[in-house]
Image 1 (tube, rainbow, N blue to C red):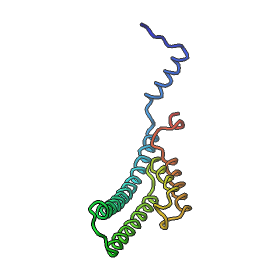
Image 2: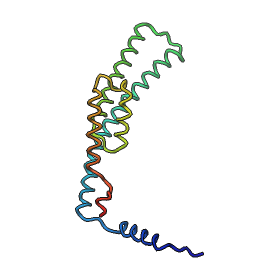
Image 3: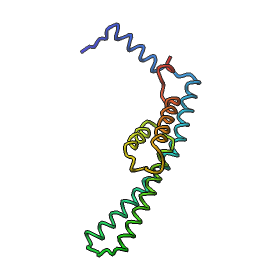
Image 4: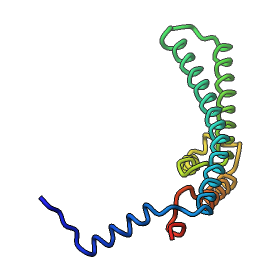
Length: 161
């Protein structure tokens, strides 16, 4: 069984293979490497903020689970003082979680997924209320999008030519 390619298809294939095999200039490679390193530097800060948020979120969930278990499953009698202690602790952990969320929202986004995460937080004001404003969050997102656009890490149509 023999497969043939039309002349038009052959030309398209030849152009594609030429672009694929054509080495990039040193200037373009340097720009791509610089952009990759710039994004990597942002990723370090983003990762720290994400880990901090994960820690406070986990501590809140654990403390809440202990409270529910003690009250509902173990049948432990809760005095008013116990209830106040748990309530105060949960409130404190919630504030730390909100502060950690705000810190991650302030951290520079290293990629498009991080920007999408920030956009989803716009609708979830309860997770950062009192720590930053809508205007600040929108400004962070605009700056992140501008940075990513100015620092591509893949060849664009302009750099291929």
